[in-house]
Structure formats: structure tokens, C-alpha cells
Image (cartoon, helix red, strand yellow):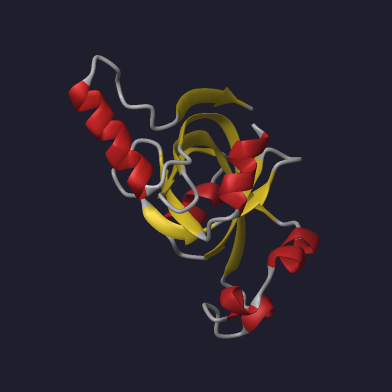
Length: 154
């Protein structure tokens, strides 16, 4: 599980969407392994924020990164948070660039995706290693060894 959080922490964004919809949108995430969640700074008026305001929502988060060797989709519960201390902790110049009035903009919404489960594929395979493993698989009875696949419960 530590590897999962470490690799996610090294990424800047993934795709998040609500269960039952086909729409996944790119958003920056902030990892919180102790709480078992991902934080997002969003806008009032978006589907995610509006639905979270009505109560907890089933959601999915997906991310892939060759550079970080992680390919995952996670399921959890998306909620609206009013934790100003957490928002202050996460706030950055990047987040500020999306809001006309910065941190105090009335459209700022803090969302928390508390994870329940994830399916994860990890790899430490370089391009050269990938070619070697593929060739080995084609020339022998062995399947290519390109990494691990596992499921997590939070």
C-alpha cells in the first residue's frame, strides 16, 4: 500500500468521475495516506461539486503514468469538505490561478475522495526492458515479466 501512495503522490493529476456516468474529468489530486483519501480543489457549479453538496457520492479515480510506473483505478466516496485548515494546507499558486479571488473565492470547493478499493498495475520496466521481455515472450514459453497487478482495500 505504501508504494501505491508514494507513486500517486508523485503525480499531478488523474481522472475523476461519478459512478453511473461516463464522464471522467482531469483534476489535480493531493494524497492523504493517513486518512485514506485524495483531496481535490474544485469549483462551485461543476457536476462533482453540485452532486457532493447533496451528499456522499460513489466515485472513481483513474491514473496512468509510464514515468511513475503506475496504472490504477480506484473507487470511493466523494464528499464536500468544509475543512478550511486542510484547504489552507493544500492551497498553492497553481490552485489560485483557477480562481479570480484566490483562496477566498466563493466558488472554491474542497472535495475528498475516501478510497474503498483500487486495482493497481505497477512496473519498473524501462523501454529497453519492455523490448527485452516482449522478445523473450515471443521466443520462449515464458510470458513477459512487466510488473505486478494487485487489488487494495482501504
